[in-house]
Image 1 (cartoon, one colour):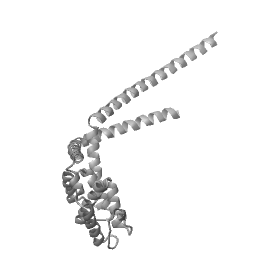
Image 2 (cartoon, one colour; image 1 turned 90 degrees about the vertical axis):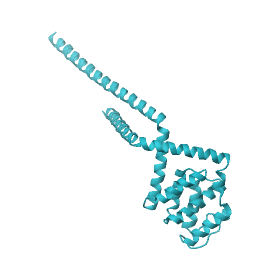
Image 3 (cartoon, helix red, strand yellow; image 1 turned 135 degrees about the horizontal axis):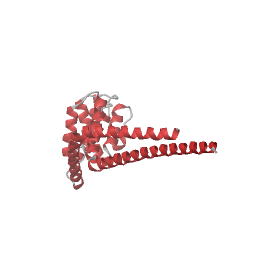
Image 4 (cartoon, one colour; image 1 turned 180 degrees about the vertical axis):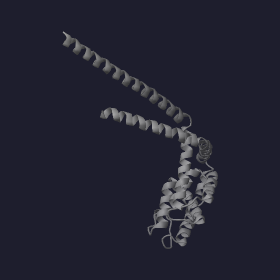
Length: 238
């Protein structure tokens, strides 16, 4: 009888310990659930309320960083040209800057790059293509022996990467498609695009102000997400 009582007592203690462990795990999961809900709620609010302006600023920042990397320096002159061209065309300055960064892989001189940028905008507007595609064609024509613009009736002369090749390319685009980008800004579609671009600039300005705080919040959420991931990994491996 005494032996049975000992076994019962031992089993009871083990059961109590198991319950305590389960309660502890339940408590941890409750805290984890509340934390997940809190972070999910915070992310949802962040995404819906200021996500648009942050994305607008992020796209602008990324475009400028690409140009800086391609040139090896920051060019206020080229950024100024992009802003000025936005005012008279239907293209946004972030798209223009991205096109400049593609051209900068083949052209480092600012004045030459400006000429190539204007030619790229006219080509894109005339042929109904996006700026990235137009810049790619112009860049390949300048930086290789292949004339990628011959299908559009544009002839080029001069050695690869030479000033002569650039001048014949930009002059011939100007003769064939010159003024297309600015002319299309005066249409209904162009006016709507210019309105969108102006609103985008406003979003970028707001995003620039909020960026430091958003970066801090993003880092906190990242750390929390990594902690949750490690927690679940530990549980699955135990």
